[in-house]
Length: 175
Image (tube, rainbow, N blue to C red; front, side):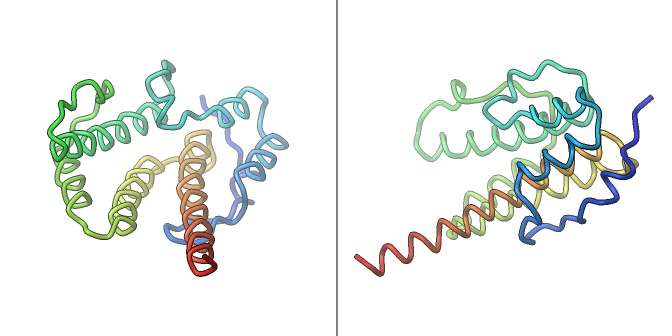
C-alpha cells in the first residue's frame, strides 16, 4: 500500500501550465526532504531526465508511463528531424513501449510551426496534459509527487527560456 503525504502535498501550490514556477527545484526537494521518508525523497531527487530514461529499470508505474510517453514523443521528433536532414533516424531512436498514433501528428504539427518557441510550447502542453492524466486518482501519494516534480521541471525550463531571451536581447542591443 502506498504512503500518503497529506501535509506536504496540501502545502504545495497548485501548478498550471504557463505560470511562473512558485519555487526552485532545490526548494521543492528541501520541502520533500523534511516531510517524506528518505527512500521516497531519494526517489524524487533521482527522477531521470530524458538523457537517463533508458537507464531506468524500476517498476514504479507512473514513472514508467511518463518515460514511455516522453520517449515516444521524442522519437517522433527524431524521425521528423532526421527525415528533413535526409539521414537515418534509427541510430538516434530510443527503445520505447508506448504506442499512440496522435504523437506523430503532434510532432509533425510542432515541426511545421515556423515559430520555434510556439512549437516547443505545444509539445510541453501535450506533456502537461499527459501528466494530468497520470495524476488522476492520485491525490496525496508518491505518484502525485512524481507528476508534480515533472510539472515543476517544465515550468522551471520555461523560466530559463524567459530569462535567456531577455539576456540575449539585451546583449544584442548593447553590441
